[in-house]
Image (spheres, rainbow, N blue to C red):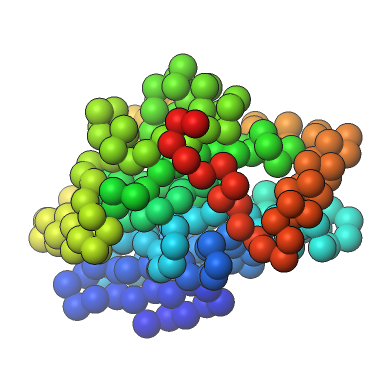
Length: 265
């Protein structure tokens, strides 16, 4: 098992690699944390013994996005630029991983969490899971590219403009979440699906992953990078700092990004 900060990566004997995020209290990742996710996925794809990856998390929820407190406590734009680059690297690594990535989502999946899940190949969730992109409340843009891979365009725009969330059960009808189970059964479900993939010829699965990425109707990397340009404009204008300061002051010492929790509010 390899361990890097809040990210662990374990290759099982059956070729299933389990990458786990664990950064209490809410899995809001630091700049380094996002790069560590990217590193774990890159390592997985480069390892010929890895046949499939499960991306999961420990704790209350799957991922609450970037650590806004770190951003506001860092002078200048280093943390902002670092978070932009780190998220881009992590999302890209999930999408371009040479083997399929199964995202196993419990609890909240917000902001950057949607970026990870939207680029995964298979998504399973617990019955308490919900998804949302609260970026407009934080003075930022991003992950609309990935939310659009989970829901249709008009629903994506509604969720994006309102910062509302959507429960995993509602995503079943769109086919973006494969199955929803009680939280206690989530890891077993992900492992069963991963075992089905791992049982195939790895050469064919790797070729299939590359082929499916090649026929995607949207270049997710370019699309997300386009969104990030507007985030930089909002930061340079001072709007983002205002909204992030308000968020941090409202949550005290917490890095909790889950203030938008609740399905389709």
